[in-house]
Image (cartoon, rainbow, N blue to C red; front, side):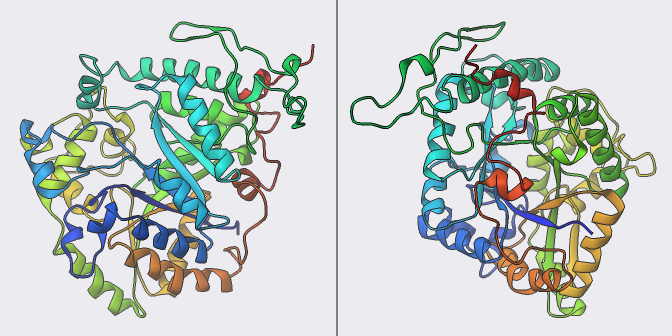
Length: 453
């Protein structure tokens, strides 16, 4: 049995993927503007030996449902939402090993300043930063940044491929490994710092990277698209893939497809770690956990669920028949999300009612509830049946969901020998892959490394 990995999956907002549950007694989601809140969470997760925090983010709003922003605002459905990046240095300073995955879109920021920002984070976290590469899918975000609408789905990935090439040239190729001398006479050898001279379809970047090489150079690369084009992108670039599959049948197919595509581009299947979205509700006994789960369901807000998932799919789910199967239509939004609930599993048809009931706690991933023994059995079963590497754990209660996982579930997984008992030393990449701090030679980025020739 492989070692199971956990990330905390959250957002710098009040309500991420459990709409309405912030209203339950004892929930502290309203503390999201407090640094103490985030530092305390980081310490809890490090106590539980989580691999990292995976910060989701959006630059738009969910206004597709009822053709209005009102439901999202009334119910705090991912608005207000703060920038996650400023939290990372503070949380990193309070911890020693925890990794930090930052979601940032290639659609709205030029790669040159972004590369500097990520190198800076990699330096000050001592190599514990990851980048979740997204292309953005909300028209509201495009309009706020001066575009009429979001570009079509596959074209966004074409631009993303070039964006990554620019970033690789800056991170991997602009400074030689021994460019920095660090002496008081000469800090860096000018002959070993080179402009990248990139001239492409979408970007022109002539100059040198502004930062000296950071511990990982390129941050650990996450990618969350499970559409056909997204999986092709992942096969080339991703080190970790985040999926949101509601069943083992769908996840098994996605995992196999991604690993197969990776081999076609010369990478080993183990070069990519795959994390599925999951939510865990724990009790000391199965009955206690079931009671807790049923209590959580009382706070789920149907309109908030419809607001989030209508916006993400690009269709107003409220206008569709509530108890008839949802059918796939091609949109420019999050295609993999719509595919999950329409065509990914030929044995399952989803109605809007079922989507609302399923996604109300923790998003589109499954909810596992029970005693530590029961949930550990379920996790082992998911891994054995799908070959998934780990889970991005969404929360139902902030921070109680994570405290329960740390205090109740992880000791059970450790006793079974399937969860680490200590952190490995080194950067996030070294911790995840038991290899070097830099990308392996088999990765596409290696072709852009500094060469003395």
